[in-house]
Length: 219
Length: 172
Image: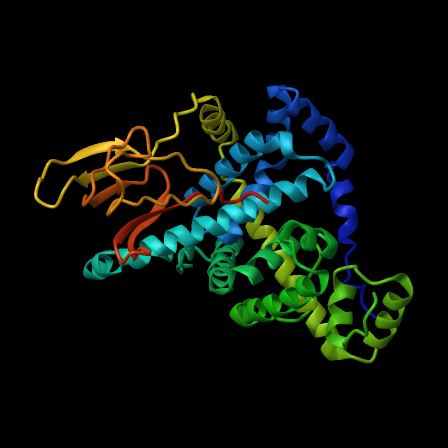
C-alpha cells in the first residue's frame, strides 16, 4: 500500500504562520489607525490573495487590480470586521468577490466589444494565448513544461463556472478546509463538497494529458 | 458527518483530510482492494500539486512594493465628493433650452423617482426646477449605473423614472 494521499488541510493555517490570534491583533491595530499593521497584513496575505485572484481572472494585470481593490476594501471596512471569522477567510471572500466581479465586468465589456474585436481577430493571433505559452522544440525543459501546465491550468479554470472555480481555487491553492470555504463562500458545507467534486472532475478532464494517475515522485 | 456519504464523497473527504479518524481508517482499508480509488487519489494529488506550483509561479511575479504603493495611494487619496446625478431636461415641449442640475442624493440600493411630466409647477427638489411637460434627455449617473424609463401615472400622465444602482460589490 502506498503512502496515503489524504491531507490535513486544517493544519495549514497554523503551519504557515498565519495564526488567527496574530491576525486579530494586527486587525485591531489597523482599526486603531496603525498603518504599519496594515502593511503587515498585506505582506502576509497579498501573494496568496494574488494566487487566488489569478485562479479566477484571466491575467496578471486583472489579478493585481483585484488584489488592490480587495485590500482597499479591507482597509475601508476594517472597522466592520468583528473577528467572528478569521481575517483571512474574510479577506478571501472579498478577493473572490472582487475577482468574480472583475470577470463579469470584463466579459460584459467583451460582449459589447465583440463586433469590433471580430474585425481585428486576425491581427490578434496571440490574444489570450499568452496564458498558454507553447512549448517549442528549442525549449523542452522542465521549467517550460511547468509553465505550459500552468497555462493549461489557467485555461481549464477559465472554462469552469464561477462557483466551481471558487471552490477548487480556495481548496487546492489556498488549502482551505470545507468549513472555511463554506464560510468564505457563504454556502453550506455539502454544497462546497459537491462543487469541489464536480470542479475536480472537470479539471481532470481538461488536464487529462497531464495527469497520469501514476505515482508522483516526491520532491 | 451527519448524512450518509457516497463512496465518492468519502474518497474526496479522505483526500482532503476531512474524515474522522475511524472513517479515515475504513477508507484506507477499502483502498487496498481498489486500484480505481488509488488512481483517482493520485490524479487529485497531481492536480493539487500542479495548481500549487502554478500559483507559486503566478505569485512570484508580483512587485509587492509597487502594489502596496498603489493601494496606499488609493487609500490616502482625498475622498472625492460623491457625484450627484445630473439631469439634462428640456423645460416644456418646445423650448430647447438644456440645462444640467443636480438631482437627488442616493443611498444604498436607492431609487430616485422623478416625476417630470404633469407635476406641479413648483419643484420639490431644491436644486432642480423642472417645469411641467419637461422631458428628461439625459442623466449623468456619475460612478453608478442606472436606467431611465417612463411609466404611466395614476391620471394617465407620463412619468419619467430614474433608477440608480448603488451596489457595493465585493463586500461580504
